[in-house]
Image 1: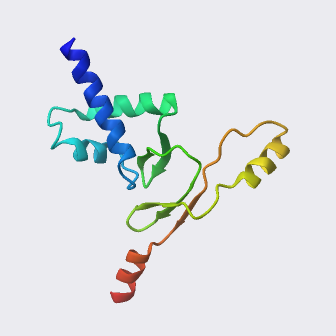
Image 2: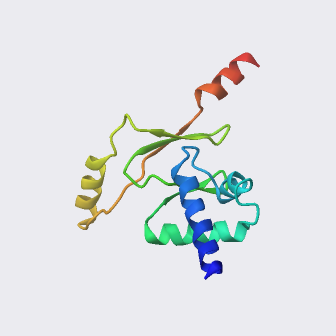
Image 3: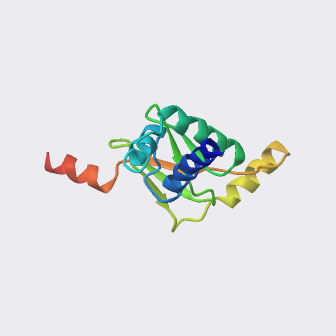
Length: 134
């Protein structure tokens, strides 16, 4: 029974970590963030649970950003900006999710669109400032 409690404690910690941050972490970042509070958590446990959460729809994968899969604990439709320089991912909550594009895509394929992810790619304010001062 104690083993199951530990298992769920780690699983809950992983989910809580994802939902408690807006940095859109990778599995490695989640592992690093949890090391202090859960020093016995393995990277394999983090990967296994992220895979489970994705399959359940509890979290979303933002795909590969510069070769590393990044995750979001917020599954509500929203827009993202990805910095090509520092790999930061920012939520753009002030922008509406593109429902019009989903409707157009559904019309073009003659089917149903269940979801859509809109991501902008460019250079963030901090990286632009660094480039200007260099």
